[in-house]
Length: 120
Image (cartoon, rainbow, N blue to C red; front, side, top):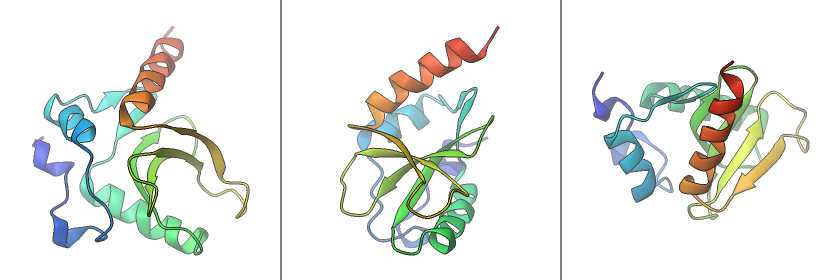
C-alpha cells in the first residue's frame, strides 16, 4: 500500500482541505493502523466526506480517520485550521460532536491511548 493512497491530490479533495504537516508525517511513517483507529485511504475519505455532507449539510467536515468499533470519525472542518473534531457519524444533526483536539498530534496521542486500552 502506497503512502499516496492516503493523500488525495488537491484537485480530488475539497479546496479548503490542506493536509497538515503532522498528518503528512503520520502517513509517511505509515502509522495508519492504530486499532481501534485507522487512517482512511483517500477514496474512503471522499466517500465518508460525501456521506457527512448529506447527513450534516450545514457543516463542511472532511474525515481522515475512523474508529473501527463505533461510528466516530476524526475530521477537519472548514475554517477551523488544524483543529480535529471527533464526529459521531449517523447521530441526529446537532448531536454529532463527541470531542475535539487542538491538532493532529493531540489527536494521535489520544488515539495511541485508545489503542493501549483497546488491546487486551
